[in-house]
Length: 67
Image (cartoon, rainbow, N blue to C red):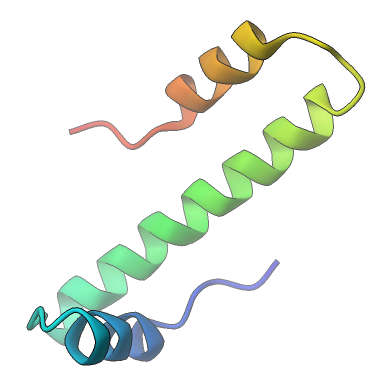
């Protein structure tokens, strides 16, 4: 999986949502989104054949960015 593009994140935030962000902040947001997407993808693979919604919720909580 390739990472999310900082320019695309900046364009979406500024164009669609009217939120001004710096290039650095857009890059940080893109990294966070990429990390989250990878974590969700890995969690989904591990839990694909299990019927444990609590396990899935716990995995997502563990992978959530801290701070």
